[in-house]
Image (tube, rainbow, N blue to C red; front, side, top):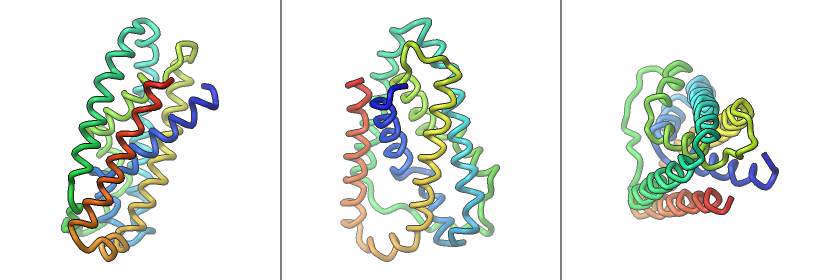
Length: 199
């Protein structure tokens, strides 16, 4: 993959993983309740689960797209629609529900398993596989690239949310504050579809 395509992929992965969802809310809650250090197994599990999911999507979908390129356009349309819907839902959402009480921190296996049941994660990685696969790219290359980019993006994003758990709860005191923050993140997620169509 060319360097000019790697940056849009990295932006897509980071924007997709940093937007609030089940995994980020879980990392924020864990950070608030148990601290950063005790939340590391959870964050590593989520990141590894997303990396594995992205690799599987890249390996399978890349080969399929080489055999039937018309599927790429269909997946771009569906993926774009889903991401724009997700951006709209995010933009109008309020504060996350941090009232979940966990007796012990969720570990590696719980974090990894969460991603395989997460529709947002499936949409992210299949959309990325369809959008960023070059016709000349071998499926193994795409699998490794997507796994590395999404795993790293998730690790960074979850670390930010985990560390910000208590800080966000203190700084964003009103629903209006949360709506403004979520509207910004929703706009960023919507903007992340632009590179998919300009490639």
